[in-house]
Amino acid sequence: EKRHWESLKLVGMEKELGKISSVSFQTSKPYHFAVAGSTRIRVYHGNLLSQFRQITRFKDVIHVARFRGDGALIAASGDWPVVKVFEMGNKGLIREFRGHKGPVHTLDFLPSDTQIVSGSDDTTCRIWDIPSQEQVCKFTGHTDNVRSLTFTKLQPQLVVSGGYDHKAIGWDARTGKATWAIDHGHPIEDVLLMPSGSMMLTAGDRTIKIWDLTKAGSLLCTLSNHQKAVTCMCMTHDKRAPRLLAGSLDQSVKVYDLSRFAVTHTMRFSSPVMSIGISGDVEYPTLAVGMLDGHTAIRKRSPTSIEEKGGGLLTKLPPPRAGSKRYFKRGIGYKPRGRDVVIKGKKRKKLRPYDVFIRKFQYNNALDAAMKEAHPVIVVSVIDELMQRNGLKIALSGRTDADLLPVLAFVVKHIANPHYTRPLLQTANLILDLYGSVCRQSSMIDDLVMKLKVAIKNELTMLDHMQKIVANVRLLGANGLDSVPS
Image 1: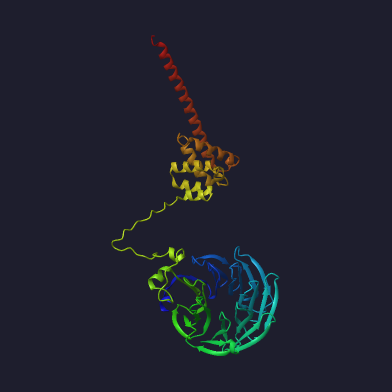
Image 2: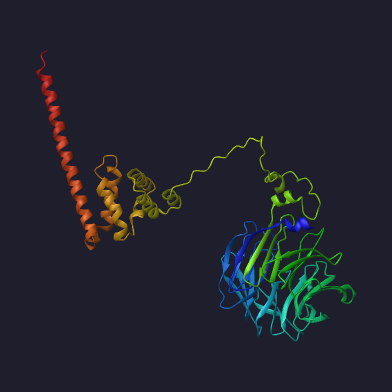
């Protein structure tokens, strides 16, 4: 058990401006997770563990954000009485549900994925229908703020809410009426139903209480292992050995074995724990812990740590099945020994900046990057490549006098070189076509255009002289042949 939890290595520590009030994992692969803190929601990739989405359309503090099962939608609310639903693809706001009279601290998608249940400081819980944008049901029975909600897929009609009035109430989602109520004895911070729906856990003050719902809500056990208030709970997804994770203001997350009602492991953190979540990947789980100081600790169990520690809850992992992911990754953590022959792979040649811009079809930037190289061969090669791609006109268009100056100076300097004359002549013609009507607006450009004119005139004069010399040489050669005696 200890080896299993120690194999979760810290891979990231993200910082937010305010406390991390909510962590929510997508229930399907690749197990993306959303972290709500301050006035924005950050969405992290389940495999890369890096942020790839951010929702910032909030003017006040966010209290909760929840993924829908398929990860297509995310619902959020906070210090305002409105439930907002966003589409993950384009981060667009698609629904707003209004009806609460106070801040919303808890919400979630019901198993149908078409309805949302929310709990507010106005002491009510409400069910909203996403397609019709209407309120379906309203639960009234709490006398203080509602802070947590839970349900199970096996009993989709049962919704349980927990509030600061010390009560956990079970509601029938079909009728909106309370079916039972349990008194925890302290303000309830979180409630959790076991997957079977037969047991319920409530967290409040420094205790976690376990209730048997099959026996009229009788108390099974009270866990009092924390030194300060318990703020959040979640269950692991391993059906062989499920574990309860509980976070507390004492800066710890404790792991409980509910079959023995005992603590099996404790993880320490740098700040009081406010929210917690774990991915559904049983083999390589990701644990995200949100803290009061705004940090989110992300821990991941990698294949390397499994091989080093010798497995997780099992004492020994079974051999990998052929064709599985673990089969192809076997030996990934192997370190070469003294007699091993190590073959070094060829390093991929890094592309120059102008090549990168050409591949991205950013021809303007490609020409500028080539100019910075200050090498005539490179610049002319890039110009020739742009001509082949019909992109030279695009690269020269839309330039200011400061951007045009180095290009025109290069043309003036190298146009007489016979190796560069053909591409540079076409470049000069394009510049005159594009900017001929505005040449008089910049004295520096005018000077270069005059220099270009002189350079071309000198080149034409030299060509004329060379043609005359060639003609005279041919004439002399012809006269010489005629004077030779037969």
